[in-house]
Amino acid sequence: MSAIETKLAELGVTLPDIGAAPKAAGNYLPFVTVDGMVYVSGQISQDENGPVKGVVGDTFTLEQGAEAAKLCAISLLTQLKVACDGDIDRLVRVVKLTGFVNSTPDFVDQPRVINGASDFFVAALGDKGRHARAAVSAASLPLGVAVEIEAIFQIK
Image 1 (tube, rainbow, N blue to C red):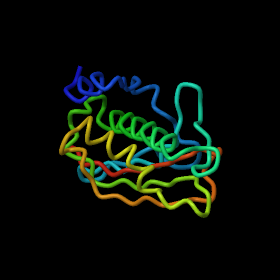
Image 2 (image 1 turned 90 degrees about the vertical axis):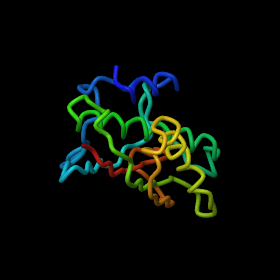
Image 3 (image 1 turned 60 degrees about the vertical axis):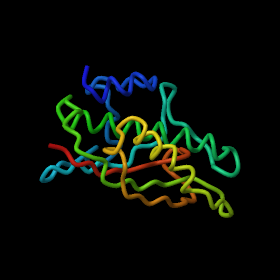
């Protein structure tokens, strides 16, 4: 087991095998690798039961939104593992996240929702997990999910 996956296990998280990574839902790639950078397409909030749906500020609390963002982060790491041919320890750092929160028009705590992913990356990866970030509201997201996050990673 890799060092990163050992730390994830300590946090109660097991990444799926690379063959079980979420597939692209359209005419795009789940990730693209260019010059040591991995650009991962948006990963929606989903768990073993399927899409995690909700509108933060209405049917979802801020805390539920943050948990949905953590689920996105786990999917992002799964795609990174695929991009690294299974060797996720090739990760140099998380460079940037862009998080989208399905929220009501008056909800203003999108950054606190996306903290669910940011805090998870730092807990799992230490300083490698610190990153630049944007957190924005969306009137709607695919399949009605609560959160979608895309990421840029640097690998060796």
